Image: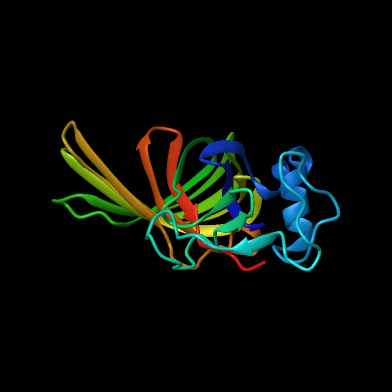
Length: 227
């Protein structure tokens, strides 16, 4: 449960507590009790509203069904339930738990080298762009960019390695993104390269686009990580 994005504790159908593993360890005595005993054994302390439980009988046991699939699929880790009806729904951080951040950036350097300048048609260039990200994404990025620049239409594709802190996790990852301009009409696209995350950003996936000048929009999630 330590890697869950959010844990919802239900007591007889009512929300008793919500938070991450660390937050509930600090605020919920019942959750501390559950985590300490890892769903087995008999806790030393009992809840005042509960009848005593025989020492030979575990207070915590696994029961119930997955709130999404209706069966014990394992996707939500498990649904532990105590004998008083206290239920813990463990929501793991996977692709169903997406977040969106808008990361502003400054361009620190722009090194552009044309490699094809025909008499007719758009110019082709290679550009190395170095950036500093701030806000929700704190760090640096280096993008290798190929551009096509014409009087009425333009486009670019880029591979960019980002070294930064995202959602409190530090590491590196690679995005490939691009854009097209047809007069005043502009479109953008981009994705996080699968399995490119390192260190605490291992398991990162999602999309990354520059729809606004000086802003990288990242829609992302993390795959479930083992304890």
